Image: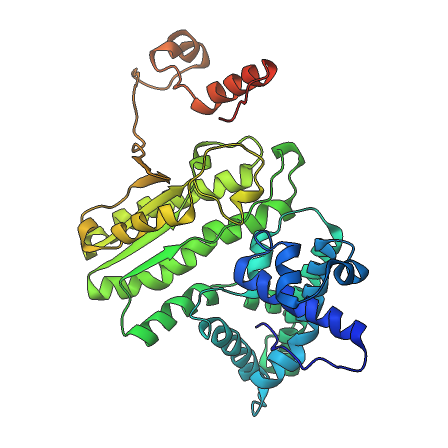
Amino acid sequence: MRPAPRKLAAVDPQPATRERLVLTAMKLFWEKGYGSTSVADVLREAGANSGSLYHFFPGKQDLLVAVLEMYREGIGPMLLAPAWKGVADPIDRIFALLARYRQGIVSTGCVYGCPIGSLALEIHEPDPPVREAMAANFHAWVAAVQDCLDAAGDRLPAGIDRRGLAEFVLTTMEGGASIVNQAVETFGRIDGVVCVAGILRERMLFNMSEAEWDPVIETHLKGTFTVFRAAAPIFREQKSGTMLAFTSGAFAASVAQANYSAAKGGIVSLVRSAAAGMNKYGVTANCIAPVAKSRMSGQVPFGLEMGEPEDVAPMVAFLCSDHARNVTGQIYTVNGGRVAVWNQPAEVREMRKDGRWTVDELAARFDEVGQEPMPILAALAEREAAAKSGEKPNQ
């Protein structure tokens, strides 16, 4: 949760100004996003001048680090203390912590999400201080849970990795289940779920590390699964419901985003499987591949024509409405005023023989099946040629 604004001291203007700048940035980063918040926005809302800001923070990233440090410092007094008030049992404290966290998200109507989590999803720049501050926040959460597990003593199996378990507690299916459960508790039922969260970690395949692969798969693919999994039993019981996930045209292939492409391809297969498995229960599942400016896409260095997020919203509403009760297993691109549907994968050619093929036989007759053109290769060749000629290759 975002720490509540504290009363600023009037005796020493420098610390008061610094704290006001950090609190203002904290609020704006949460509500608008880091990428969408300018230094001018912070100065205007904080009522400060640029000289004051740059006295404390040489750049915007330094201000971000200060925000993350304030979040970390606030974990104890602003989150743990109220969550654990009157709760003595260490295991109960873990559940109380998760409940307090959910309460903080729900108190905003789930509009802004987790403040630290939203920053983690948005930021993919290789800035060591930012990464270190982000990691410090996660480690502080892990340490709080591990303290509870340590206090549980022999109630846990001997030899269990308590730190690993603490990390597991914070990265499991709790998020998806809590979102669905909160909707049911608030509205009495749930008729649709929409999974949008995403991050980027661009890197060529030969340079990509496991640390750049795992969080992308975790956020996109597992994040979608956790929500779908939590909603599926409810939809099956009520014999209706809509599952809607966000993919990307990059699921077909990507040059420097193998992790993102794989995650988005996994979402497509997950949606098609959900459409097949839930169809008899009156449940639909579809994908939207949006092309729109966002916190994430705004940092992608391509000159592609993009619509606005508001352009995608009507398609979301349509697919969740009664108008689309018989639409399932589809992928739709939405870009401004353009809507397109993707084809369904299917075999296009075959060749046969009696028995097992040999390599020489395959080589002799391979042209009978051949290969299908890969559109991205042709597009890359066109861009390269355009770039060499001085044209704009991404338009």
